[in-house]
Image (cartoon, rainbow, N blue to C red; front, side, top):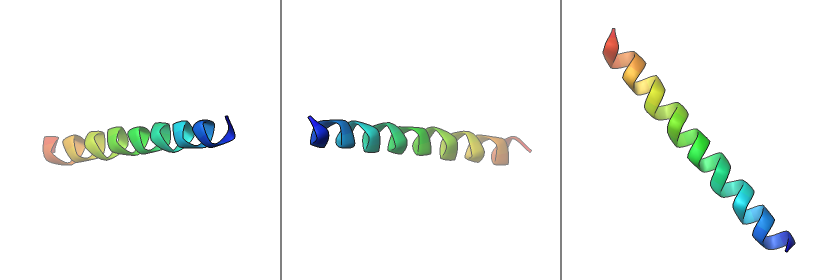
Length: 31
């Protein structure tokens, strides 16, 4: 259970990182 929750946390943080990088790229190109 501990391992799966750790994997889930890492997956969520990587998804958030992907979203933030995508939004920063679109903000950069929107200028």
